[in-house]
Image (cartoon, rainbow, N blue to C red; front, side, top):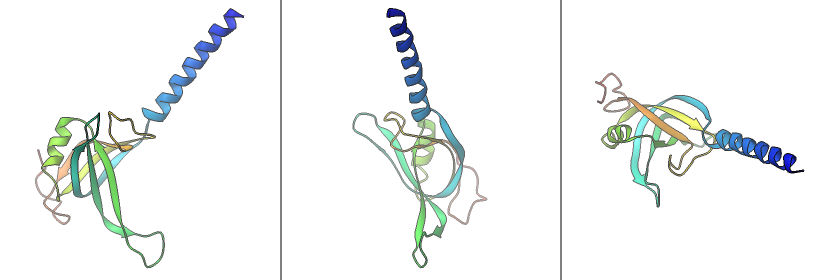
Length: 133
């Protein structure tokens, strides 16, 4: 009986480890989004994380006759990404991101985590400007 309890505990620990990894650390998708940086701020009660919102060009609507802007809410990874985005509010930016299935408090409030700032322009129309370093 003792042997089966030990095997059961090992199986339970392995299953819980896989479930936690899948829900919180598995990268579901990666990509690039571009648009105007609406806001970027550091917030949180215990874990202070960088959170922002990107408003993308164009409008989409689930119903005819209504307008809805495309918003991309994200968290930023690392101080180097945060420093670049802090100085880019209101400007056109291109961001490389990773999407996780669920957020964790120390990574940010969003499932989308920006890992790199590819480019910062002056406006939506000026995408040929020098990269923001």
